[in-house]
Amino acid sequence: MKLRLFLFIFIFFPKFNYAAESTVDPNLIHKNLRCLVCQGQSISDSNSDFAQTIKLVVKDLIDEGKTEEEIYAFMSDKYGDWIVFKPQFNVQNSLLWILPYIFLILGGFFIFSFLKIKKR
Amino acid sequence: MQKIIKIIILLIFLFVIGIFYISLTRDTNYNTSGLVNKDTPTFKIISFDESNFYTRDDLKKNNFTLINFWASWCAPCKIEHPILMKLSKSKNLMILGINFKDKNIHAKTFLNELGNPYDLLAKDTNGKQSVRFGVYGIPESILINKDLMILQKFVGPLSFDDYTNIIKIIE
Image (cartoon, rainbow over all chains, first blue to last red; front, side):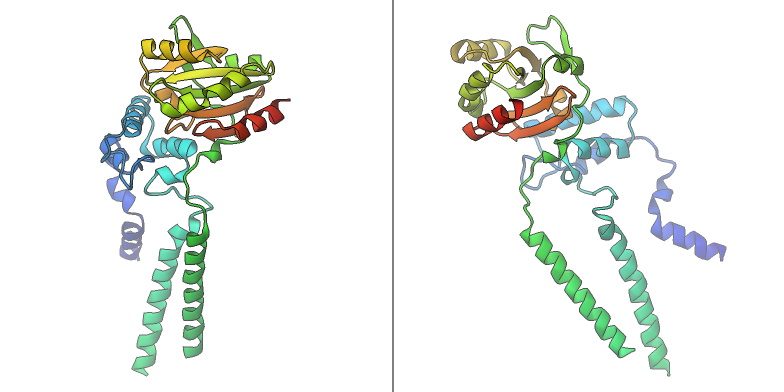
């Protein structure tokens, strides 16, 4: 039972694996922020004026002691969820986050049922 | 059992079609209209002559304030300038001009040639303050009321329609 619980947490909540790493990496944030004036580039990939400004603001927010999630929340508040490549969990996009798990469970159920019928 | 599977497959198919339909028909043009009806962000911006700082409190002095982000190197800013000059005649409206990533000498020449419509003039040399207002390109203008609530956000140069719209709101 304990092993199952451990595997469940390990698979579904991979963030627990990184609990020890709490420092904020600006490059990681730049990669997850969209350059709004570029064609499909991240802030990290772009040398545009907008990207340079966002990099400065991200640096300031890190210096203020903001966490990665707080920085994404700040940017989403100013420019909308579109600026973050990996959207935050909220009511509007909850289906997007939950559906893969529902499909996984349904898929497992179908495979289980299919094998059971075949055995008979 | 097979009937249930068929129904579920049909439901998944309809769901996927529905998602495609919604995604393909919605307006994907990016805008920052999400800021409308929100509170004006806190800011502290240096005045153009570097003599003092402007904050949210300075925006409470008039019934309405238009915050305009501009620069001398920005061609569309020249296009909207006559509209700003007309708006500056309205007593109910204060205009805060924020000179964006510009050189002082060029900005001064710009205002000397085309006129100065701004009641307050500030500068954002590195663009960091503009991020607080969700600005991603200039010109952009934000209309706020005395309660510091954002009423309208104009991305791009102000048009004559925008002018009539602003006048309608402030009068």
